[in-house]
Length: 217
Image: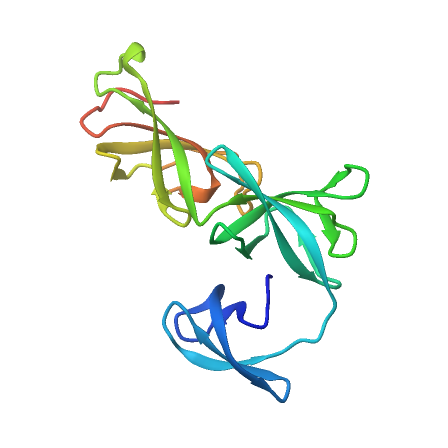
């Protein structure tokens, strides 16, 4: 989404055909640019698009804090809550997800265009903090603990499987899904084999692997 003469965010045919990565622009001419992927150093051609762009304010929420950046949005581009894009901010280049779109007059909408949006509210999803409720192996309620683990946004949590994070080994029993997540049929997952990405998790429920009696649900 963010594009300059020096760097562009596009898919890489070598290492990332489905997800945009940061590329360096090596040369331009004839309507095309020679670009190099910063992830795998693959060099390839990219068609330059001549469009009007609108500089829009982007508010990024990350680990309970927020900061403001800007993004150049191409004319006519459709924006929607739940979409993700690569943001080149002063703090870092990061993947963010749209959580709200603000129009003139503080109006909030689920979808809009580059021309109409004034502020894009987002949440960083490249690396995320996941809140977890961990129940003790003997099932005592007063020993329940709340933990926070740091994982990549695409880390998978699978209901019924044992995982080990933050020095804890546990079996995943249930997941509450975030409101801005897309592609889930239910807001709660609790069937063995259900999968949730860390960036979509509102809270994770688990128990010590040694426990066979306690259920978080």
